[in-house]
Length: 333
Image 1: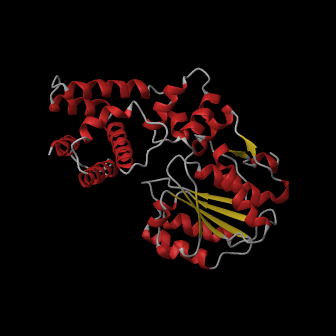
Image 2: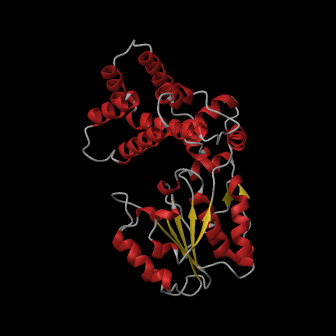
Image 3: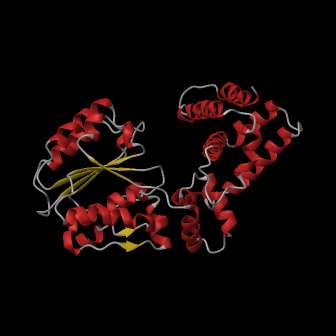
């Protein structure tokens, strides 16, 4: 295989501006050796970092290109496809227990301390830095303090402010945002020609406005599962379904999705309370509005914290039925 075959060049359209901003720093010899790319899940952090790595590794011979439908679908499963990348690209991500271990960081430090395979730059991608343990984060500090020559370290993060201050202080942060609903709908429409825009917009909201998540979920029956949930919620409002039976359906069908959709709807409702309202509202998520209508803004924030705590405890031994009942009853108090 030629080295050029390992070049990752396909860039998502909403990442063109941040890509140009970062590469312009390199052209002006002002790009720091340690970067944090921060953004919500599904915003394209990994895509941007891989394309940036190609720019740094191939220098002037590299130009990004647009994703085709086939390539973007393949990219969504890139970690499962044994992507054969440049030998001077070191890509670290959680493999067990959703953590990046100290051994992974130590092995990386040892590798980048050696001369590059191709005589040029070396690039390290930490995907994502939020999963560093205390030990691995402290080990990473060593290379951030004194990076080897011609080495660039790119940390991906869901929330840069959650990283250790000692890590943040040694990196320049580049935040990226999700595209607008209109832009995402246009992009998804070019891939799913048979799906109507209204349906795509509803799917986008159900996937927390992430076009990449929507792309993954578009043909999985997501809309049908949400419609079934909406029907049961309507029955709850009309006293045609007991809370116990509703909880039973949630536990049987879509506990994780229900919590995710409820959190998305509540965050949107809170934004609307502050008049931070988008041009497009989700008609689908309006099914949750009766739950929120009698809550004060303070209570809404408390409920959101409770829901997010439940989402964060999915892999624990938490009694889901009891936790779900407690959370739902809070909406009526």
